[in-house]
Image (cartoon, rainbow, N blue to C red; front, side, top):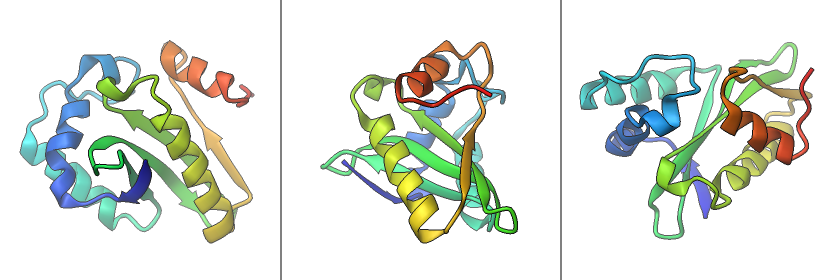
Length: 139
């Protein structure tokens, strides 16, 4: 597994998780009515936003497993928000943790950030279990 840059070609795989209720049930946004054009617009906006970094987590065969991101990057405060989302067929297989470790390394070593925080809907039990299992603490 490895990380690579998000690209417009990732729209079909992005749409797959955007419209999967098993993935989006704990997310804040409403994604159920999205189509391929919406996914393409989502990616275009993500790529051009200078305050965000989005990486795709892929298998050794370059299959899109999920995405890990640094959002709301604030260089004066040297901070960013961490997000991770996986396609449901990759739940529980280690890809999310690989992505988190990799993007944190990038955040601290390449961007010289001092803090990275996670934010999660309190009803998103899967995400809370994931982060707590890996040593993240709630404030």
